[in-house]
Length: 142
Image 1 (cartoon, rainbow, N blue to C red):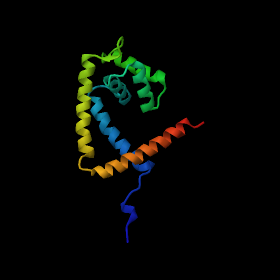
Image 2 (image 1 turned 180 degrees about the horizontal axis):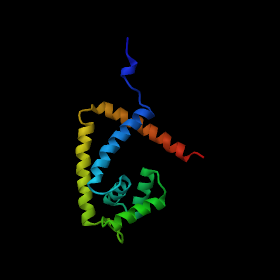
Image 3 (image 1 turned 180 degrees about the vertical axis):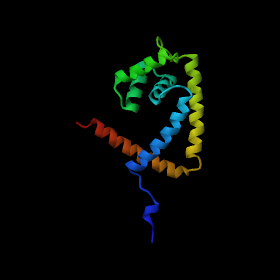
Image 4 (image 1 turned 90 degrees about the horizontal axis):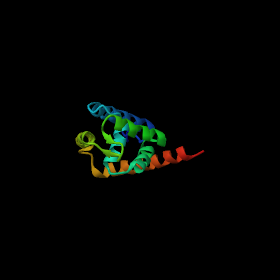
């Protein structure tokens, strides 16, 4: 007889528990840079070479915030000296912080996901993509 209780199903609770555990570790990494998670997403969008409109579109889609909030995030990064507001580009300090975050996340990713079989990661990624698409559809529903 198989003990189904030993094999948890993917549901909102398991996703939420994993999310909050990962977010706590992420927030510890971000604390060294004095950035919020939202600011780090905005910084990354600019680091990826997007202009302000493209970066704002990515940030709003990723964080589920309105466009004015995305622009406020960019303004905060300009005020912190991490973005050049005239060009919406990273300053030297912004690039340094972004490199540090990229390196830290790379190491964290290996510690969290390393050793998990690729097939299991692919299945989980597909399942989460479906859940995300359905949640996005719910957000778009009247």
